[in-house]
Image (cartoon, rainbow, N blue to C red):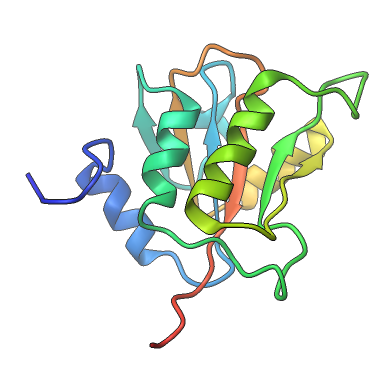
Amino acid sequence: MLKNLNPLLSPDLLQVLRAMGHGDEIAIVDGNYPADAHAQRLIRLDGVSATAALDAILSVMPLDLPEFVPEPAFRMQVVGNPQAEVPIFQEFRDLIGKHEGAGYTLGSIERFAFYERVKQAYAVVSTGEARLYGNIILVKGIIKPA
């Protein structure tokens, strides 16, 4: 056990997060997502919600700065209604705000474009999220020197 570290951050997940560089992407996907088929590196968090995984990851990984990329986090659009909002989208926004503060937005990507972007991601975290559209891609940022 480690102090002050979310217990969802397994050794494998911590290794992936540490190995990622600035601009690398990590996807957190729901239980319906074809994670094994799309992942270069797959981390399984079965039984864990996508929001709990997001909260744990953002507790140690910075998102890219808004001045470097306009949207350092993306969610999948609802099929047939790209403007639609489902409750998990606001939960994603709330967690991003909790960890990164104001100025960070949650972008959206069409379903098949999302799939292609996940295939290019450094890693995929497959969760047990049962809610539809519980998928998000994060762009890793930097730690500014003090």
